[in-house]
Amino acid sequence: DWVCSPAHLDRLDGLIGSVQADALFIPWLLDSPPSHRLTNQILAASVHRSRPHFDVSLWAYQVHNAILATSWVDISNDIDAKVDLIRK
Image (cartoon, rainbow, N blue to C red; front, side):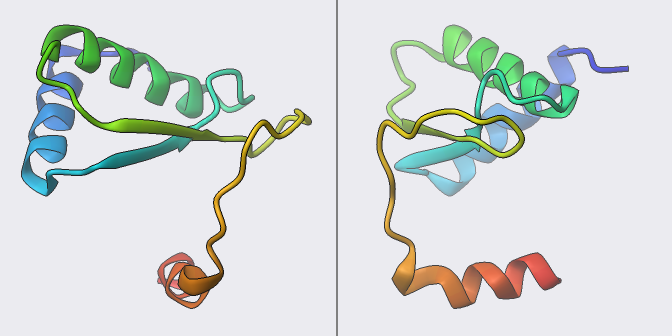
């Protein structure tokens, strides 16, 4: 079942806190897969309950839907590492 539970929020809060991220990259809010939409629900709930302590830039990327780009991030310097992670 695709449900946002308190356990999901606790886990996400712990992960964000442990890595001290400056930015999070998440699937686009309206992407087709239910898991991508759930990711956004969980993050929104986490941000809501963490305010005002949530100080992380959020970047959403489109995977399955055709949308117009509003910005882009040059990953040229990191592409080899990304490919390695995908293959693992």
